[in-house]
Length: 115
Image (cartoon, rainbow, N blue to C red; front, side, top):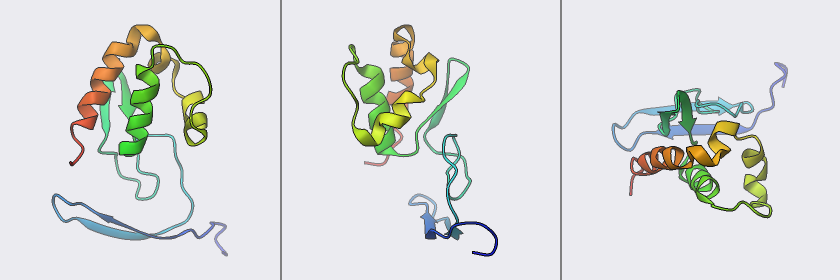
């Protein structure tokens, strides 16, 4: 495209609780922060933990975090789709001494998901 962005497609956001709807053309994504990479809105799944923001994009992302943080012994390679994400997790999330607190916050975030 002339503006230098790669056109990816159209995306639509619909809130099942309030009916808010938004649609936009997707031109690439910026990931790695508690902001939705397409609509640039704050993520629903975020909470303060140890003075930082703990966040997840969706239920699948949250499940990977719970599995990794909750593992008593971290041997082997995680699933290929999760490998890069696990590598770049902040050190404070990986420390065993923070495991209980991080898992409590992750559990609280899981309870906010619709059933």
